[in-house]
Length: 137
Image (cartoon, rainbow, N blue to C red; front, side, top):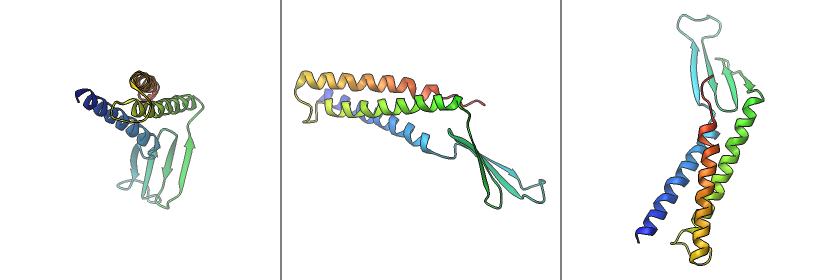
C-alpha cells in the first residue's frame, strides 16, 4: 500500500509540474507594461508593451498591435524546451503504465523497467526544460 501511495503521489507531482511548464510556454502575456497615460503624449493616451517566449509586442490605444519575433538564438532555446516537454510527456506515459496500481503493461519486472524508463525521461526532460530559459534581457 505504501509503495502504491508513493508511486501515485510522485506521478501526480511530476505530471502536474510538466503540465504547468506546458501552460507557461503557451501563455502570451509573461511581462506586461503600460506606457503613457499620465503626463505622456496627447496623441497616444495608453499603450501596452507585452512579451513572451516567442515575441515582443506593442499595442496602442487604437488596438493596433506590432510584434517582433525573437532572433535565431532563441530558436535553439525553443527547441530545447520542446524536447524537454516531449520527453516529459513520454515519461508521464511510461510512469503511468509502469505503476503498480495499473493493470496494463505486463508483470512485475516489466512494470519496474517502464517505471524506471519513465523516471529517466522525466529527469532528462527536466534538464532541458526549466533551466534552459534565461529571462534576463
